[in-house]
Length: 440
Image (cartoon, rainbow, N blue to C red; front, side, top):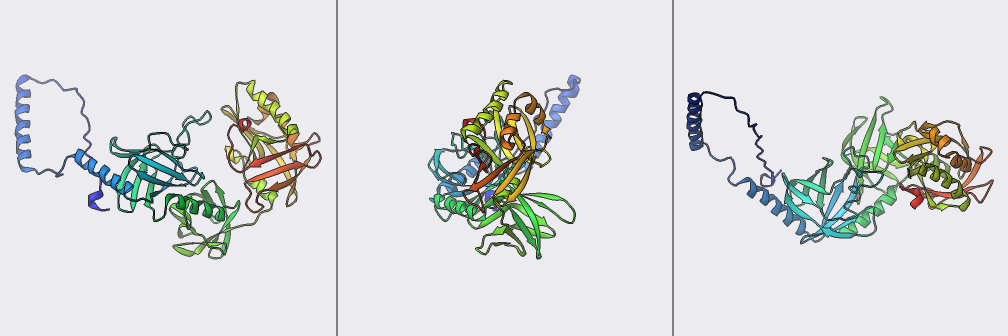
């Protein structure tokens, strides 16, 4: 670290006001003695710093301002919300001009401009303190997330270099980095989005010294389970213009892995050790459906399907609750066993109703209810009319066969399901999480 860019803080602990009583003579002697030592020390000791703390603080803020506004292209921000790194990393690009910041995100096709400031708040802070729907996407509370997604919009400035700024989220405590861009912010985010599409699959495997080991992806977090020890490792990562970059170097079976570089041959090598690579695995639509999480929304249901779902909606309303989430897929999304299920969140409660899924062909599957439940599933099935959802998904005779279609058979973002027994029953489920499904 450049010494000129180091941050110094002088934080003196406060002292309590309580003083033990003493005789007047003893107290006077103590005062005179302390004065003597104070004068002796101050006459010999030089100042540790040549400038005051306020001037040093202002110097850091001035250097940050100069760096941020000195590059017309802007800066890339590797943004990691949530102190548990649940979502992995999201790529941002920000252009600074005067007091305005134009923000781009890989999760949006539009930019948004708002104000920012550099301030002293128990340390030098970069703050996006006026609302920006992109910058505040993970920090804005909702009815189902009163603490939002533990995202930051205020960052402690830890270090400033000409091409790298180190930040620390005030809320999450996560270290994040801003990189000087050599292309426009818009071009950078567009390239990241293209790379994400090239490398986004539902199923991956690691190849380590020629051996293939499945690796699971949820959002921008890989989970690797060592076949020798059974130990699982969460690996948060971010998409860049060249591939996937891990937040931290990870030890995988004795290999130091920092990420994977995209190549058109489909074998994405680790840049520091090419004996480790990431590959995508082809999946039929039925496997996509049963191994991933798929979310419902009312506007994508047929009239006949919606009629049954509305009965459950009214059952929740009778308890003073809104249905916050409904999904098909492994119920470990809600921290249950992982069984394929219809799962839900109603108000502050969640539950799961496991469904057996028999694969007929690559795009035909049969559903039936298992008569099991997890969490509050049985209570809602019995008391809030969630049995109507099961009866429409699995048919009256507990056997419903569906034909599946999709926007992309190798990497679907949605799957349309049409019941073969009754073509009036159809709906579409989505890979993107959908909150408040009856409002969408």
